[in-house]
Amino acid sequence: MIMLTGSQRDYDAIGGKGSDDSPAWAPEDMAALHEFMAAWNNELVESGEFVDARGLSAPVHTRRIQLSDGVPVVTDGPYPETQEVLAGYTIVECASFDRATEIAAKLAKTPHPENATLTNEWYVDVRPIAEGIDDL
Image (cartoon, rainbow, N blue to C red; front, side):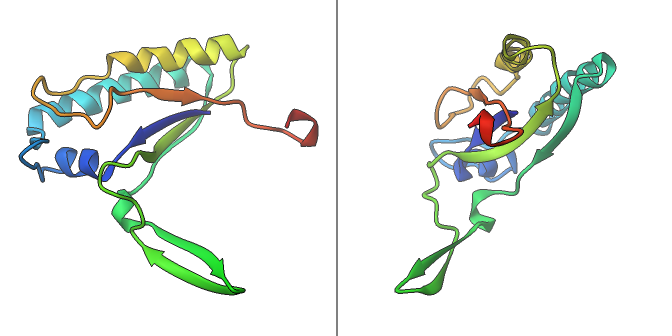
């Protein structure tokens, strides 16, 4: 699984709601991002390595449920605007962990505006999916 991260601030900038320290992305910047991601996904489909991919809604739409004295407590939007969270994932079925790493490394060239203020340099994580207890 290739996991992409982002923060609420990143979502806001991409969604056209920039701030003083994180300007909004222009439509052409978003078009370049979508074109890049579509080409990356299509390459995986054509190679037969694509299994699934999904993006997740902005962190502000998150609810955290935890127990307090045995009672569920719900917190809306529990993340600070700059805290990184899982933003989306792509599942690939490929020959090796090294091949999955090679696929993920192509995301290092994901375009973004020159004036974009990123919470952190963009990165992705690659992590095998456990098929059973023996894989833990």
